[in-house]
Length: 93
Image 1 (tube, rainbow, N blue to C red):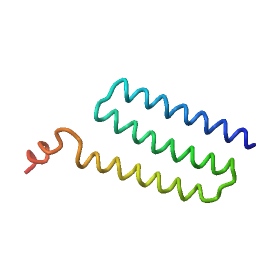
Image 2: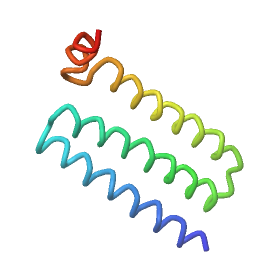
Image 3: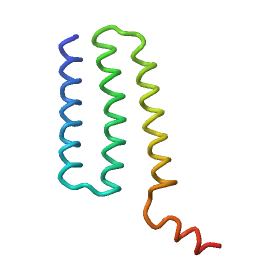
């Protein structure tokens, strides 16, 4: 069963590498954000799968911290970094 978990973790790490390739190939603001969110959610999955496969009970806590940081990153990008957002807010006033 441990081999199955390690194989799943390797497959998830492969998706992170493919996402990183996509970011370097086409680096736009929205694409970079989506890749960062992909890294966050996939990182959570990798930590959970490795924690289960290796029998580490604290992996759930680490995965929760990674998920919270990814959520904060998404909110911060939308509030601060989305292009044209300030112009839309000024038009509403």
